[in-house]
Image 1 (cartoon, rainbow, N blue to C red):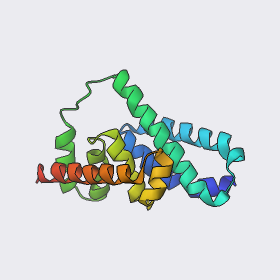
Image 2: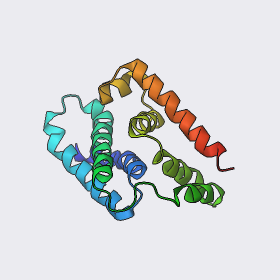
Image 3: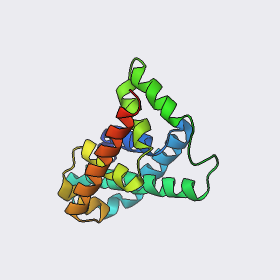
Image 4: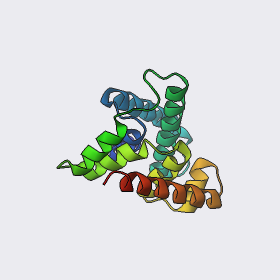
Length: 158
């Protein structure tokens, strides 16, 4: 079963990178996720749901991480260079599109970010609703707002 967990590790990294920019903190958060997954594996009834189970844990811990950071900021809440980094990433070579998206996602509200990240991982509205404990209509509203926010960020930096 642990080899199946390792197979989904890139999903966990993508989720974590959307919640945290600092590489050291990303590693810590991935370790927290893997520990929670390992501790919860005996309770997983359907091994076919492992991917969704792992992402649910990653997004819940990511959201908790952000809430904690907001409550106890180590640095100013609004990073004055964030928008400049996004503009730079969109013009930089290499993995610029991914980096731009991750930087932009960090600027949108957490509930919208969660829905969009899960959509990007291929989950449908019903699955996302179940993972986040909200209605499918609410998923749609959050997804629409998230896409609008990303479009506004993109339009504001061209």
